[in-house]
Length: 112
Image (cartoon, rainbow, N blue to C red):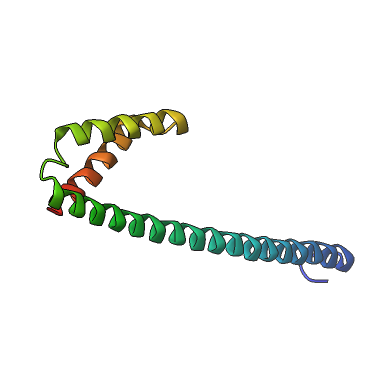
């Protein structure tokens, strides 16, 4: 016997450690798979958001050709009101939502 351990005790302890390691690896693999799926879904949502933002910029360009005042201050006010309502509805930070709205507005306005 090495180190004064009883062989049956050592093998039981070793077996439990081995089972824990196997369970940990299964949990890790399962978690990794879930995280990969979530990342894939988030990437798809980002692609959709960017595509929709491009569509919005294109529509703003078209509207500004017909009406140069289309992206005036009133337009920003209307957008802010709509986005603020969405922030309230979803429980989002209103200041961050307003900054995002203003960024989208500026992006569309720059497309003139």
